[in-house]
Image (cartoon, rainbow, N blue to C red; front, side):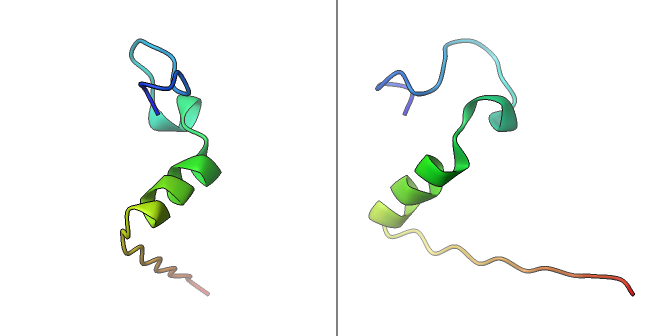
Length: 42
């Protein structure tokens, strides 16, 4: 993503510069297993 210019040069927090949809699409293409766990307090 950096090489394609999708992430600007410099120092950024991930939430400022990474499109999460595109990021997870790239992870899926590389067969990463993603597990999401949500906890709630009532």
